[in-house]
Each structure stands twice: as C-alpha cells, then as structure tokens.
Length: 336
Image (cartoon, rainbow, N blue to C red):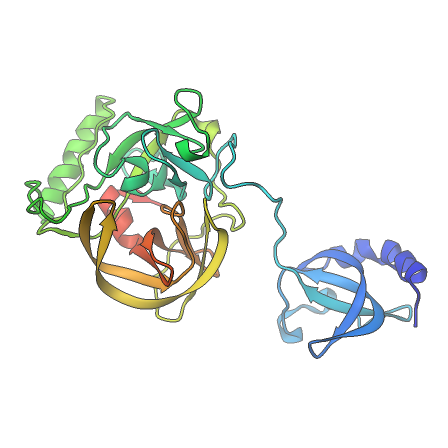
C-alpha cells in the first residue's frame, strides 16, 4: 500500500492532467471508499462536481483506476463556493442575499430580470420585501442589507422601487377597482410605454381581481449598472424557466437559511396566507417541501438545471409556497 509521501508526490505529478478532465475540480489524498464504505487504504482523491457513469464521459475524461500503483477514488463534492454571508453588505450585490424596502426588516434579493419594454435590468423580489406590503411608492429606497441586518438609508441604498403587484387582503373587498381582463393589461402596458418615454419612475400594474392573488412580487431599479451582478449565491446563473412538476427537485439561496434543496409536492393550489394581522388568498400556487424560513421571502426557486420555477413568498415549518414564475414575469412585464 502506498504511503502518504509517495501519494503526495503523485498528486503533484498528476494533478495538472487530472484537472483538465471534464467535471474534475480538485485532487487530494484520503481513504478510498468502496461500495459506500470507507476503507483504510490511502488513495488519490479526484474531486468532481458531478459523479457521472462511464458511458456519459469521453475517453479522455475518464479517471484511471490506478496511477503508478496508487489507487484513485472519484469523489463527488459538488460546486465549491466561497462562504459568503447572505446577511452581510455586498458590493456589487447579487441574488440570494439580504435586501429590502428601507421600512421593513429584511427579505431576499431573488434574481436579476429585464424590463420587457426598456430592457433595463431590475431586481426581482416580493411585494412585501420591496414594496412593504402595498405601503410603498415608486422611487422608495431599497437597501442592501435589509434593515434587520444593519442596512440603513441612504448609506446602503442600491435601488429604487420601480413597480409592484398590489396584494388584495381579505376585508378590502377586492376593491382596488382593478381587473385582470386583457383590455386592462393592454392599457397598463400602453401607459407604461408612455411613462418610460417621459422618464417617469412610476409604472402601472394590473390589480388582481375578485380578492384572489396570483403573485406577491415587485421589481426595483438599481441606482447604477455596476452595483449588482447576476449569479445567484451558491447556485449560479439562471438558464430560462421551467414549469413545475410534482416530484421535481428544486433548490434556492435565501437570506435566512442560505442554500437549501426540496421537492415540488402540490400544484395549482388555492391557499390562505397570513401577513401579520392581515390575510390574503392566493390561487394557482406551487407548494414545495419545507425549505425556508422568514427572511427567505423573495428567493428564486430553480430546478437542477437552473431553470427558474417560482418565486418563494411564504411557508411554514412543513411547506414552502411559491408563485409560478410565468405568472410573475407576466404580471410585472419582465423577462429573465
């Protein structure tokens, strides 16, 4: 059996060629694992992002079982990220960290999106994170980190509230005078074009009718292009969107619980959601397993291929509730 010193020498000699192989991100020394059990044999550990079957790899990317008499052990470690705190102040700011309207505690920076009309980059999160649960006005300061994490205005201002979809609470009669009909959506889009031509910060959104809500969502405009970046903490770049399916494996990066994984459990859900002393009814929602806590609101839920699936906005110890991403993009007239 090779000793530590000899294997260390082999690591130095072979790591350059090993690191050129697809999927390999590291090389080290450790006990070899066989059929799920740790042995006492030292081996050259070849660390990979994903453990793939031999049939899925090109010949040049296969790791030899031995190198000069030293056994190798292909070990799954996943993608490695620097351990950044989701509640700290970050410049540039990026999705997955603490953010919020200056008057709330804190939520999560969900993802960078683009306005369909102007193509400008915007920050997506929840209404109750960026618009203080309907109690904000376009142009209000958005700070990073949120106030609960030490953020203060104007020092920590990174964006201004652009627009939001108003949440209808029980007891307000559904009576915002709104409609979700095609004519109302067309009128809103037309008036938003006019507003953009005159450089107005205000944007019109269609109110969700009949006391039922589809989304808890808002967008904010960064104060400068270089103050935000697009990769989600511990997840990376979003690659389009996907429709949720029961049993789909999903993940998110949020301000409170960081990176977590879960599974879609229920679709097309009508559910009552509490907001402090108020209650709102949502329909066509997606339920996932418990993978969040307060402060994770606004996190983007993605599948294993980094397709956006939904916008996290509520939950309990047992479930996580998310708006379907297609509904969010339509309601706010944005794209990924």
